[in-house]
Image 1 (tube, helix red, strand yellow):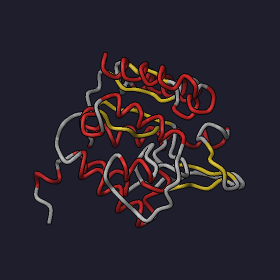
Image 2: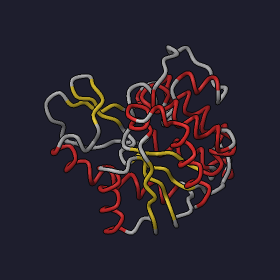
Image 3: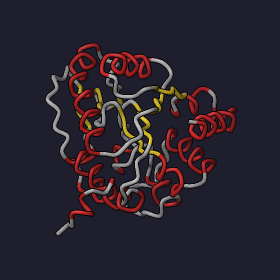
Image 4: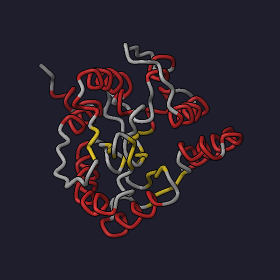
Length: 231
């Protein structure tokens, strides 16, 4: 039986939000929703993670990604956290295959440079414009890669932002957007209309850095830390 104080913690609010995601979306041929929280293992790992790092009432700045991928949050339930980082950095082991995910490598390099997971997760909450992922014919699909999915996703995205802001404490002066291109343009347009945050700071997407600028990874880690700490 949870006490009233426990119910007010960030961990409770986050998990309650994630476990109750029930989108009503029209999906095109070959497109499927990837919901990590329909998997018992991912739920258990996410519960352990959030109760470890978010078991308080401390407000955090939001970081919005695109949507979960198959090998990070898709299996662990934790954004940008593959089973290797979950074990080696966060101390949460599992029987999941220890497969690396590129974005997770970069994000945890940022977390290390910031001061470690305790410091980072005390200051930030990572979510996504679409907290559920998508695949098309078994391959990762961004919510904006399909025109019909993009159009149909907007009410779901707005609902998710509103629900999180209503239940998960945040400092609404500024948030961060992972992706300086399409994801940022869509988020900025929605924010201008609905006034969720005073400012959205775009950051290069971790996947883009690791695929196209990996030799300059350390430089991009510095850019991240400077912007995260400056704001």
